[in-house]
Image 1: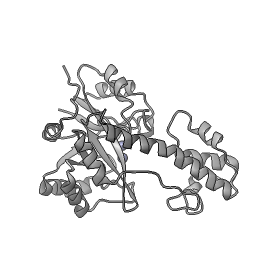
Image 2: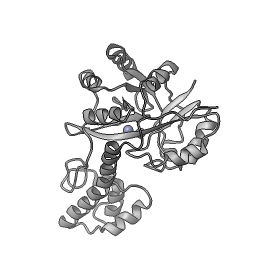
Image 3: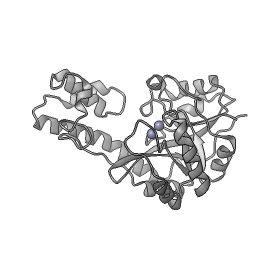
Image 4: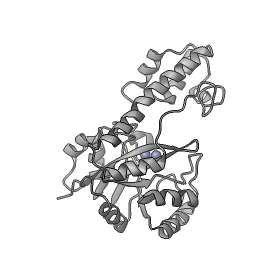
Length: 282
Ligand SMILES: [Zn+2]
Ligand SMILES: [Zn+2]
Protein backbone atom coordinates (compact mmCIF):
# COMPACT_ATOMS: atom_id res chain seq x y z
CA UNK A 1 0.00 0.00 0.00
CA UNK A 2 1.40 3.38 -1.01
CA UNK A 3 -0.10 6.45 0.69
CA UNK A 4 1.25 9.98 0.20
CA UNK A 5 -0.30 11.98 3.04
CA UNK A 6 1.01 15.46 2.16
CA UNK A 7 0.29 17.20 -1.16
CA UNK A 8 -0.75 20.71 -2.22
CA UNK A 9 -2.90 22.05 -5.05
CA UNK A 10 -3.49 25.56 -6.34
CA UNK A 11 -6.16 25.93 -3.67
CA UNK A 12 -3.11 27.04 -1.67
CA UNK A 13 0.44 27.41 -2.99
CA UNK A 14 0.74 24.40 -5.29
CA UNK A 15 0.85 25.01 -9.03
CA UNK A 16 -1.66 22.38 -10.18
CA UNK A 17 -5.45 22.34 -9.90
CA UNK A 18 -6.80 19.58 -7.60
CA UNK A 19 -7.95 17.49 -10.58
CA UNK A 20 -4.42 17.44 -11.98
CA UNK A 21 -3.01 16.49 -8.57
CA UNK A 22 -5.39 13.52 -8.47
CA UNK A 23 -4.45 12.51 -11.99
CA UNK A 24 -0.76 12.53 -11.02
CA UNK A 25 -1.55 10.52 -7.87
CA UNK A 26 -3.02 7.84 -10.11
CA UNK A 27 -0.06 7.93 -12.51
CA UNK A 28 2.34 7.62 -9.56
CA UNK A 29 0.61 4.38 -8.60
CA UNK A 30 -0.56 5.65 -5.22
CA UNK A 31 -3.27 3.76 -3.36
CA UNK A 32 -4.09 6.78 -1.21
CA UNK A 33 -3.36 10.49 -1.26
CA UNK A 34 -4.21 13.25 1.22
CA UNK A 35 -4.86 16.74 -0.13
CA UNK A 36 -3.38 19.04 2.52
CA UNK A 37 -3.60 22.62 1.29
CA UNK A 38 -2.56 25.38 3.69
CA UNK A 39 -5.43 26.43 5.95
CA UNK A 40 -8.14 25.53 3.45
CA UNK A 41 -10.27 22.63 2.23
CA UNK A 42 -11.32 24.58 -0.87
CA UNK A 43 -9.70 22.07 -3.24
CA UNK A 44 -11.40 18.96 -1.86
CA UNK A 45 -14.62 19.08 -3.87
CA UNK A 46 -12.68 19.30 -7.14
CA UNK A 47 -10.26 16.56 -6.05
CA UNK A 48 -13.18 14.31 -5.18
CA UNK A 49 -14.73 14.72 -8.63
CA UNK A 50 -11.44 13.89 -10.35
CA UNK A 51 -10.42 11.00 -8.11
CA UNK A 52 -9.21 7.99 -10.12
CA UNK A 53 -11.03 4.79 -9.08
CA UNK A 54 -7.80 3.25 -7.82
CA UNK A 55 -6.91 6.08 -5.43
CA UNK A 56 -8.36 6.69 -1.96
CA UNK A 57 -8.66 10.42 -1.21
CA UNK A 58 -8.03 11.42 2.40
CA UNK A 59 -9.47 14.88 3.15
CA UNK A 60 -6.93 17.02 4.97
CA UNK A 61 -5.33 20.42 5.50
CA UNK A 62 -1.98 21.84 6.67
CA UNK A 63 -2.53 24.29 9.51
CA UNK A 64 -0.27 27.30 10.08
CA UNK A 65 0.79 27.45 13.71
CA UNK A 66 3.26 29.49 15.73
CA UNK A 67 5.05 28.65 18.94
CA UNK A 68 7.46 31.02 20.69
CA UNK A 69 7.99 33.06 17.52
CA UNK A 70 8.61 30.07 15.25
CA UNK A 71 6.25 28.87 12.59
CA UNK A 72 5.22 25.26 12.67
CA UNK A 73 2.90 23.21 10.48
CA UNK A 74 0.36 20.63 11.58
CA UNK A 75 -1.21 18.23 9.12
CA UNK A 76 -4.85 17.55 9.95
CA UNK A 77 -6.92 14.70 8.55
CA UNK A 78 -10.52 13.51 8.56
CA UNK A 79 -11.97 16.36 10.61
CA UNK A 80 -15.54 17.50 10.00
CA UNK A 81 -15.10 20.14 7.27
CA UNK A 82 -18.20 21.94 8.49
CA UNK A 83 -17.05 22.28 12.09
CA UNK A 84 -17.80 25.96 12.78
CA UNK A 85 -14.90 26.70 15.14
CA UNK A 86 -12.22 25.12 12.94
CA UNK A 87 -13.69 26.79 9.84
CA UNK A 88 -13.70 30.18 11.60
CA UNK A 89 -10.06 29.83 12.64
CA UNK A 90 -8.85 28.83 9.17
CA UNK A 91 -10.83 31.70 7.63
CA UNK A 92 -9.10 34.07 10.04
CA UNK A 93 -5.68 32.72 9.04
CA UNK A 94 -6.50 33.15 5.33
CA UNK A 95 -7.96 36.65 5.71
CA UNK A 96 -4.99 37.72 7.76
CA UNK A 97 -2.56 36.89 4.94
CA UNK A 98 -4.02 39.74 2.89
CA UNK A 99 -4.21 42.16 5.84
CA UNK A 100 -0.62 41.39 6.70
CA UNK A 101 0.63 41.90 3.14
CA UNK A 102 -1.19 45.22 2.99
CA UNK A 103 0.37 46.27 6.30
CA UNK A 104 3.86 45.46 4.98
CA UNK A 105 3.22 47.51 1.85
CA UNK A 106 2.16 50.43 4.09
CA UNK A 107 5.34 50.14 6.13
CA UNK A 108 7.46 50.06 3.00
CA UNK A 109 5.73 53.26 1.83
CA UNK A 110 6.65 54.88 5.15
CA UNK A 111 10.24 53.82 4.51
CA UNK A 112 10.12 55.49 1.11
CA UNK A 113 9.78 52.40 -1.07
CA UNK A 114 7.38 53.20 -3.93
CA UNK A 115 5.47 49.93 -4.00
CA UNK A 116 1.69 49.99 -4.39
CA UNK A 117 -0.88 47.46 -3.27
CA UNK A 118 -2.35 47.14 -6.77
CA UNK A 119 1.05 46.28 -8.13
CA UNK A 120 1.60 43.58 -5.48
CA UNK A 121 -1.87 42.15 -6.05
CA UNK A 122 -1.24 42.04 -9.81
CA UNK A 123 2.00 40.13 -9.28
CA UNK A 124 0.25 37.65 -6.96
CA UNK A 125 -2.55 37.08 -9.46
CA UNK A 126 -4.79 34.21 -8.37
CA UNK A 127 -2.45 32.92 -5.69
CA UNK A 128 -2.58 33.91 -2.03
CA UNK A 129 -0.51 37.06 -1.67
CA UNK A 130 2.71 36.72 0.31
CA UNK A 131 6.17 38.13 0.87
CA UNK A 132 7.61 36.78 -2.43
CA UNK A 133 5.15 38.97 -4.35
CA UNK A 134 6.05 42.05 -2.31
CA UNK A 135 9.72 41.30 -2.88
CA UNK A 136 9.19 41.19 -6.64
CA UNK A 137 7.35 44.52 -6.53
CA UNK A 138 10.25 46.02 -4.55
CA UNK A 139 12.72 44.84 -7.16
CA UNK A 140 10.54 46.23 -9.95
CA UNK A 141 10.51 49.60 -8.15
CA UNK A 142 14.30 49.68 -8.04
CA UNK A 143 14.45 49.77 -4.22
CA UNK A 144 16.46 46.54 -4.32
CA UNK A 145 18.39 44.85 -7.12
CA UNK A 146 16.66 41.49 -6.91
CA UNK A 147 13.78 39.97 -4.87
CA UNK A 148 16.07 37.96 -2.57
CA UNK A 149 17.41 41.19 -1.07
CA UNK A 150 13.98 41.93 0.43
CA UNK A 151 14.36 39.17 3.03
CA UNK A 152 16.68 41.02 5.39
CA UNK A 153 16.27 42.99 8.63
CA UNK A 154 16.21 46.17 6.50
CA UNK A 155 13.01 45.13 4.75
CA UNK A 156 10.59 42.22 5.07
CA UNK A 157 12.81 39.48 6.52
CA UNK A 158 11.57 38.02 9.82
CA UNK A 159 11.61 40.86 12.36
CA UNK A 160 12.67 43.37 9.67
CA UNK A 161 11.71 47.05 9.59
CA UNK A 162 8.71 46.45 7.32
CA UNK A 163 7.91 42.95 8.55
CA UNK A 164 4.46 42.18 9.89
CA UNK A 165 3.73 38.80 11.46
CA UNK A 166 0.55 36.99 10.62
CA UNK A 167 -2.14 35.25 12.55
CA UNK A 168 -1.40 31.63 13.34
CA UNK A 169 -2.68 29.13 15.86
CA UNK A 170 -0.88 27.93 18.95
CA UNK A 171 -0.17 24.27 18.13
CA UNK A 172 -1.86 22.94 21.27
CA UNK A 173 -4.96 24.94 20.38
CA UNK A 174 -4.87 23.61 16.80
CA UNK A 175 -4.57 20.01 18.01
CA UNK A 176 -7.58 20.50 20.27
CA UNK A 177 -9.64 22.21 17.54
CA UNK A 178 -9.02 19.37 15.09
CA UNK A 179 -9.76 16.75 17.74
CA UNK A 180 -13.00 18.49 18.64
CA UNK A 181 -13.91 18.28 14.95
CA UNK A 182 -13.26 14.52 14.97
CA UNK A 183 -9.92 14.71 13.17
CA UNK A 184 -6.30 13.75 13.84
CA UNK A 185 -3.13 15.85 13.66
CA UNK A 186 0.42 15.06 12.58
CA UNK A 187 3.41 17.35 13.19
CA UNK A 188 4.68 18.23 9.67
CA UNK A 189 8.41 18.06 8.78
CA UNK A 190 9.63 18.75 12.36
CA UNK A 191 13.30 18.51 11.38
CA UNK A 192 13.37 19.59 7.75
CA UNK A 193 16.70 21.06 6.69
CA UNK A 194 15.19 24.14 5.10
CA UNK A 195 13.58 25.67 8.18
CA UNK A 196 14.94 27.60 11.15
CA UNK A 197 13.03 25.80 13.86
CA UNK A 198 13.80 22.17 14.65
CA UNK A 199 11.38 20.41 16.99
CA UNK A 200 13.09 18.96 20.06
CA UNK A 201 12.00 15.66 21.61
CA UNK A 202 10.63 17.63 24.56
CA UNK A 203 8.50 19.81 22.28
CA UNK A 204 7.14 16.76 20.46
CA UNK A 205 6.30 15.19 23.84
CA UNK A 206 4.43 18.36 24.81
CA UNK A 207 2.32 18.13 21.65
CA UNK A 208 1.76 14.42 22.19
CA UNK A 209 0.38 15.21 25.64
CA UNK A 210 -2.03 17.66 23.99
CA UNK A 211 -3.36 14.93 21.68
CA UNK A 212 -1.03 14.90 18.67
CA UNK A 213 -1.49 11.62 16.78
CA UNK A 214 1.64 11.42 14.65
CA UNK A 215 4.88 12.86 13.32
CA UNK A 216 5.84 13.23 9.66
CA UNK A 217 9.10 11.28 9.49
CA UNK A 218 9.36 10.55 5.77
CA UNK A 219 9.61 13.96 4.06
CA UNK A 220 11.92 14.94 1.15
CA UNK A 221 13.59 17.73 3.17
CA UNK A 222 14.21 15.49 6.16
CA UNK A 223 17.45 13.62 5.56
CA UNK A 224 17.87 9.96 6.37
CA UNK A 225 20.14 10.86 9.31
CA UNK A 226 17.30 12.62 11.13
CA UNK A 227 14.68 9.94 10.57
CA UNK A 228 15.94 7.31 12.99
CA UNK A 229 15.73 9.74 15.90
CA UNK A 230 12.19 10.76 14.95
CA UNK A 231 11.15 7.11 14.64
CA UNK A 232 12.51 6.42 18.12
CA UNK A 233 10.61 9.41 19.49
CA UNK A 234 7.43 8.13 17.87
CA UNK A 235 7.94 4.72 19.48
CA UNK A 236 8.59 6.24 22.91
CA UNK A 237 5.52 8.49 22.77
CA UNK A 238 3.11 6.14 20.99
CA UNK A 239 2.92 8.47 17.97
CA UNK A 240 2.27 7.33 14.41
CA UNK A 241 5.19 7.91 11.98
CA UNK A 242 3.88 9.15 8.63
CA UNK A 243 5.28 10.28 5.29
CA UNK A 244 4.42 12.43 2.32
CA UNK A 245 5.98 14.22 -0.63
CA UNK A 246 4.85 17.81 0.18
CA UNK A 247 4.37 18.08 -3.58
CA UNK A 248 3.70 21.64 -4.81
CA UNK A 249 3.54 20.79 -8.53
CA UNK A 250 6.22 22.41 -10.67
CA UNK A 251 7.62 24.30 -7.64
CA UNK A 252 8.87 21.00 -6.20
CA UNK A 253 9.51 19.13 -9.45
CA UNK A 254 6.30 17.05 -9.50
CA UNK A 255 7.42 14.73 -6.75
CA UNK A 256 4.09 13.23 -5.67
CA UNK A 257 4.63 9.75 -4.22
CA UNK A 258 8.39 10.13 -3.59
CA UNK A 259 7.72 9.65 0.14
CA UNK A 260 4.92 7.55 1.57
CA UNK A 261 3.40 6.46 4.86
CA UNK A 262 4.00 2.91 6.14
CA UNK A 263 0.85 0.82 5.76
CA UNK A 264 0.38 0.10 9.47
CA UNK A 265 0.82 3.83 10.20
CA UNK A 266 -1.87 4.64 7.67
CA UNK A 267 -4.42 2.37 9.33
CA UNK A 268 -3.46 3.43 12.86
CA UNK A 269 -3.99 7.05 11.91
CA UNK A 270 -7.28 6.53 10.10
CA UNK A 271 -8.61 4.49 13.04
CA UNK A 272 -8.22 7.49 15.37
CA UNK A 273 -10.43 9.81 13.30
CA UNK A 274 -14.21 10.06 13.27
CA UNK A 275 -15.03 13.45 11.74
CA UNK A 276 -14.95 12.41 8.08
CA UNK A 277 -14.33 9.36 5.88
CA UNK A 278 -11.61 8.68 3.32
CA UNK A 279 -13.07 8.38 -0.19
CA UNK A 280 -12.05 4.81 -0.75
CA UNK A 281 -10.71 2.99 -3.73
CA UNK A 282 -13.25 0.70 -5.21
ZN1 LIG B 1 4.69 22.67 5.75
ZN1 LIG C 1 3.10 21.25 2.92
